[in-house]
Image (cartoon, rainbow, N blue to C red; front, side, top):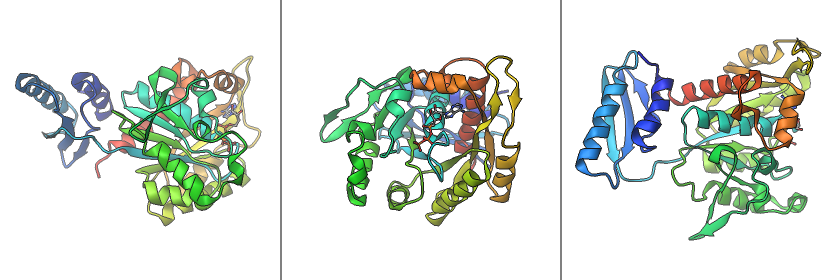
Length: 321
Ligand SMILES: Nc1ncnc2c1ncn2[C@@H]1O[C@H](COP(=O)(O)OP(=O)(O)OP(=O)(O)O)[C@@H](O)[C@H]1O
């Protein structure tokens, strides 16, 4: 027996990345398979293998596969916070890496015009995107994850003078780039809840949003504002992540909680949204992030924390709708 997350991870290998993320409803698993360029024997073998594998998922009694040779639509996950500096970029990068390791075809967009940092976090600072048929081609970050950043379009510091429509156009260039096989786009949103964010969520319609907050009350109040921004335009909430939750001592690993414990989880409950997990304040996370080596790409407690959050996001994506 395997669960849906295991099966989703195996599906990528089984289909050479041609299948969409499966969904299960009333015991029926549905997914799309890109059969473009496959011979009949090859196609039948893949279809049979998917059916056989799908039926081993608990609760699945039927597997339906839509055969297509068209591009699958991108699903966007917006990572947002009410205020800056709470670790939104750190979480976005590590979430992308952890989802990639779980078998998802992930891309990363750094929409943070005021302080783009993903190129540094993903170790792709010296790369420049090319364009093909007026579309940008993403550069390659850590683990081969395709990515684009506002820093690729705007010189640092210059964007502050930009007005809303210019920023909106720049964001669209990143999101409507040539993402190839990518199915899932993690978008590191600018902090706050201004016009740019509203345009972004209205125009690009994220499939869901992840909100990042630190444990302090003030950050949580800001997080509530971010939640209502998404609520206004009907973007579903995937859940809340508490970052810098407790301080991990670099010597003994013991976690202390200068801001108390459980505040974000309680706040998530009050906002009726799932709590996705906590990431401790740890010097290694900052050091590795600065060095372009996301902790989620390695092993250990920090990688585990990001993996657990990514797994909850993956479960949300595969939920019956
Ligand atoms: N869990 C953590 N432990 C230690 N340092 C962290 C952690 N999370 C983030 N940081 C550090 O805190 C700083 C701010 O993080 P980050 O840039 O991810 O925040 P942000 O919310 O995206 O900020 P901004 O709004 O400025 O874009 C960075 O130096 C980062 O390395």
